[in-house]
Structures are given as C-alpha cells and as structure tokens.
Image 1 (cartoon, helix red, strand yellow):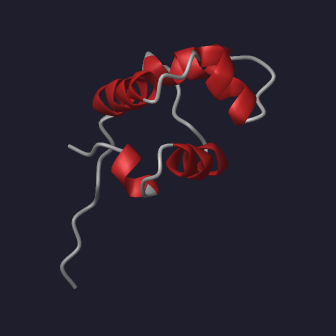
Image 2 (image 1 turned 45 degrees about the vertical axis):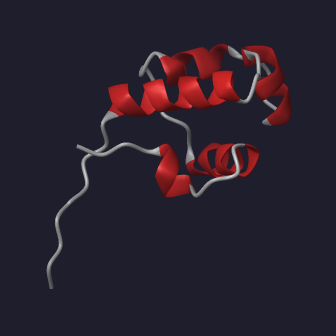
Length: 76
C-alpha cells in the first residue's frame, strides 16, 4: 500500500480559514453565531493557528463555505 502521512500546515490552514471568512463577508461574531458558539474567541484562535476546528466545526465550516472538509485544510 502506498501511504504517505499527511501533515497539517496549521499556519496555512489558519490563513485559508480567515480568507474564506472574509470572502464570505462574515464577521467573527456572525460566523460564531452560525456555528452556535458561545463566543467568537475560538475563531480568532483558529485564524491565529493557536487551535484547529474540531471535526464537527470543520464539517459545518465546509457547509457554510460550500466546499469539502478536506479543502479547508492545508497539508505540507
């Protein structure tokens, strides 16, 4: 089997998430509301590469941005 482990590029993924949010004309507060988050703080953390979205949030982000989950992530 030809398998090569994917390594997530957190910095590039955070830039992609921020770019998608801006392109969709969503504020941090509005995106947090769509994801039913208590605070937009976690979105700031995603965009600063401090944290990554969990699978549920990743799935919902893909729905919001009308794309596949794997297209949200950037690998090295």
